[in-house]
Image (tube, rainbow, N blue to C red; front, side, top):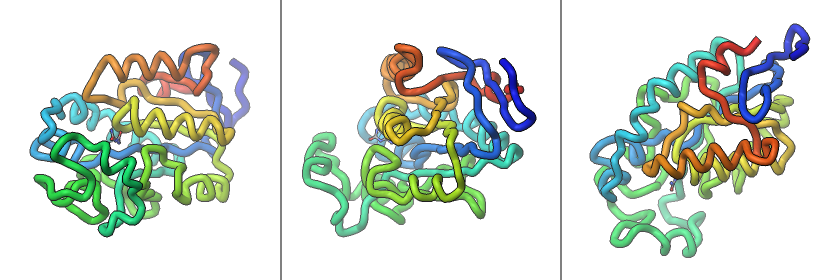
Amino acid sequence: MPTSPTTLAADAQPAPFVFDARHTALIVIDMQRDFIEPGGFGSSLGNDVTLLSGIVPTVAALLRHARASDWFVVHTRESHAADLSDCPPAKRLRGAPGLRIGDPGPMGRILIRGEPGNAIVDAVAPMPGELVIDKPGKGAFYDTSLDRALRERDIRYLVFAGVTTEVCVQTSMREANDRGYDALLVEDATASYFPEFRDATLAMIRSQGGIVGWTAPLAALMAAA
Ligand code: C5J
């Protein structure tokens, strides 16, 4: 794959992912305590949170790579205002039986900004200068300033990681695709409580010639040349 001095190509599916590091952002989706830590909202619903916590070291390595490569770094949190004014009833009322957005949970009110469980886990916490987007939807672009922040910096290539693959990660990647970004999902830096959903999402993203984008393991992205 021919490259210019600033253009890199990563071995990806369904084809090499060609990107320019000067115009690349890492988007880490919803690595929040309530989804990932034992004793949080996710585990109180009976989910095996080790499926999610298992990717934390890989996401941390990806963050180190992005910072060393001078990519713009963005973290998202799925979160709502304390008065739930940004949470439509259609979202709130479809929560798991007995536990809904805004209810008291094991780490504070569920998916409410500022509550302990809403924070990003320490190992992948944002650093000064990185953008943190509080998003009321599953997608990172819906009702947020993300698109404007990326366009202001002339970002054209997005690398995605985080949880959960088939919900907030996939929704955000589809939103990015519709907005004209080239996006790659790092296969071993995303997870679901349902591994078969994760695998199906990766297959969907890269199907039909990359209908949503590209996928690659972290090692392939780090070896891009
Ligand atoms: C995310 C969810 N972050 N599964 N949320 O995927 O409700």
